[in-house]
Amino acid sequence: MEELSMVTSKQFFGRHSLCAIVSLLIVLCVSGLVKVQAAEAKSSWPYADETKQQRDARMKWWREARFGMFIHWGVYSVPAGMYKDKRIRGIGEWIMKHGEIPVAEYKKFAKQFNPVKYDPDAWVRLAKTAGMKYLVITAKHHDGFALFDSKVTDWDIVDATPYGKDLLKPLALACRKHGIKLGLYYSQAQDWCHPGGRTGSKGKPWDKAQKGDMNEYVRKIAVPQVKEILTNYGDIAILWWDTSWGIDRKKADMLQPPIRLQDGIITNNRLGGDYEGDFGTPEQKIPATGMPGRDWETCMTMNGTWGYKSYDHKWKSTEKLIKNLVDIASKGGNYLLNVGPTSLGEIPQPSIERLKEIGLWIKVNGEAIYATTASPFSKLTWGRCTKKVRDKAVTLYLHVFDWPEDGKLLVPGLQNQVLRTSMLADGRLLRAGEHKTGVIINVPDKPLDQYVTVIKLEVKGPLNVKQAKKQQKEVGV
Image (cartoon, rainbow, N blue to C red; front, top):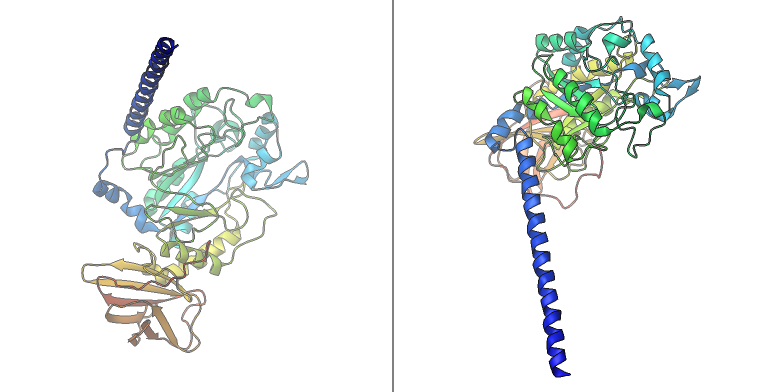
């Protein structure tokens, strides 16, 4: 019995040693595969070997810009939220999806898409008047319709509409003329009109015409179209992907090479395949404390929709939009504010009015927005703060939302020596003194601006701030 037990034990341990060896080999193979995949990912991303200095130089203009215009425009502006005399729920540019409109029926709307009032120069001048430094337009949204003359498909502005002219070329020329950076939005995954394009988060088609292989779609539609938009319109500053559903590493890698066509181009984080891009994209919300350690941009509508809807009149006030801009800048982010033009090519009047009013505020207070960095304060009860740091001094821009009734503005926790304090709007000097809980500024009885008044506080650097325990609210202003 003892000898038998010995043999059985040897067999037992022999088998387990073999299992251990096999397991080790599997681990080594998987580890090697991960390293290979990591190397492939690194080689696919154009900026994989970029140094911090090179990245800072590439991102410099974008970080300083702080404010841009988003334009959602396409065939969906024809139904404008209505299908078969019914209001379709949700945002305007998703009407085909939410109304489950068959491909052939939806394409008929293109015959009515005739933007004869389109004035790209006026659009760019409006963006510039508003104080915006860049512009991003939907070259192709989820309905697969291209605003450019695509040789890949006839589902585009030139071949499918009575207008028959490329919409991006004159816009690109206007951007160059007026010194506005041009960005292009491209829906690389969702495409409800081309076979194989994704039809939503779950990918279930509602029309047999949508069925197809997504790999083939990316290879034959998305990749060549991205090459087109990055080749035919001069310098493109931003490539704005949307959405990543169904885009795995293999598909994402197919879409990386075209990026190299534009030197220094900036991309967002919505490509897919675990590519993070250059900046994060919180949508319709402002992160409580920004996105520390990451460049980011909040995209937001002025009303409740991105694409034009004839009956959406829930417009945000100019005050709300300005405070959003200030809040975002105070957290180190950019604000991409949307307009949704009509099928005739007109930006809705409420959007124009608000953009002009924002522009008047920025004309006076732009110094406190452009090229600023995030607030050093965890929480301010009366408003927000942006800053500019120099070698021996720091300028704090105090954006006062709630004007102090007692004429004294407390800057909590600030320990630095005050060099100069003034009203940004008119340069009027203000008295400021040290206080046990920070710095006290004596302010006029009334604010200078109906929306947000800015006080310029210059202190001796480097900054020394004792932080309060309370943090900013979870979302927004």
